[in-house]
Length: 397
Image (tube, rainbow, N blue to C red):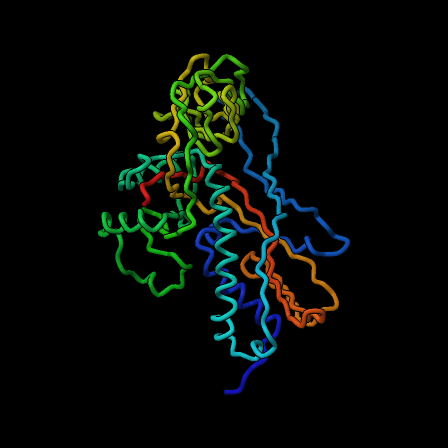
């Protein structure tokens, strides 16, 4: 069979095809792309501002109560550049595309995608404050259903764009315990991303070894609200009851024993406590999200905390748990931007596929008689609506 010289465009498109299949998590979230990043004279900086839905309160009676419309947005910074660098020869460019992909592209892109996904799962999971289950045990069917209910109560769309990411050991236990839910169907004829298991309970199930493992803070028993500043919109809380060795860490989840969640629209209190996640902490002050609102369009709790309210943290202190993640596609966003194309190189291309922009550049190094090649992706990710996601701390190894 005659050999075909691989062009930069053909190689780049194959890179994107492989990457697309291996994006077990990032392939299931909202993807944003903006080609203005790389246009000379049309720079947009490194930030995409993604608009969030407006919120309003409902009037009772005939008297007008006009509300100002306050537009809110989330800034998604596209400033992280990651890549894989290698050498390959002109002879290798004469290979068939399938062989070149198997020997060169797949190993390189597998490493790149794995690194990006692990970073995204670690960062984004720590933004999620909803949690169900018993850390240290295999999640039950009831607990998975409770996670689904958390999304429902936060008004996540009830559509085909809900997913579950779970590491292999707990996934094996789930499939064995719930094997009656998993069955062959016409879906098997479709192409799915690597790690896809099945669809059950209203979610696409993915097995993913990059699921974030969270290690809780040191002994945080006995924590309580100190007076401090208690007002709508607060994201810091003055606390007492900690010692120097007891501070929680970013990603720890807690509740306040008198602060209940409310329906996002009716503002009627639910039967469960509002959960919060630590952003940063000292022994006397916690910074957390979401911000607490007890009134108005942003109301998410039935009341503000008061002095001596007890804080209860999820899990046993100083213990590692795999954090399986159930979410709607629009809970998170992954964005890429075009990198500039260098001039004066003999092998270069930039292509976009399904919101993923990738650049390849190859150039002869006369000093060392090498032909180095680089593959780069400029990207960023953000939790847009973390309330549309739920963590399920599992058992793991």
